[in-house]
Image (cartoon, rainbow, N blue to C red; front, side, top):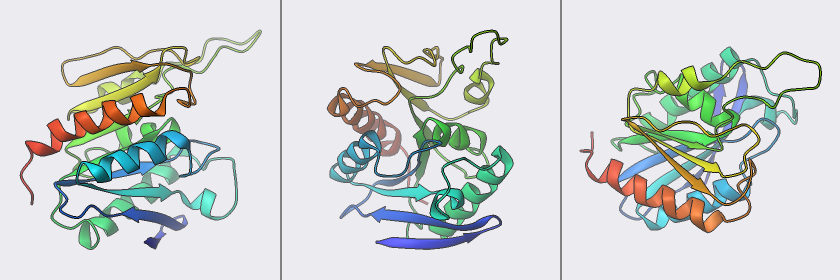
Length: 208
């Protein structure tokens, strides 16, 4: 099922995968230049549905419009919040919600976790610090975005990710899997880590 959602920055699109008897819902965003067909996103969505978690894979307006370059952060965040709010009123109504995504999508989910009333955040390949370019100053770390999240968080990171490895924290679990930032080397490991964590987070969360 595909749902088009009007946002302040153009139409977004949610691809819904419903569980038969859902214990919760998972809304995932894509990476900066990629889409919702990324192998890790598809593997996570499939395993989540098997674990009785309904899934929405969300295309940001810039991707729906056919652009590869991402919109500014404030536009991404506003569009994401609009989509989640719409899904909460209809397709995912009453379900406790985990938000997340891969790379850029994970950052958006972290920044908006409170605004979306998420009970958990799932980060696939969180881009902790952009690789340093020759002759340039080191880019700032994005760790503050992770640190600002106040609900249980799972980071699934390739052991050879060029963006680095985020640290674990009391509310943040970090799982290393084979591969790099693309998370293509072992999508089964990505899916397994995610479904087990979702079961713990959503299994202990009452429905609305």
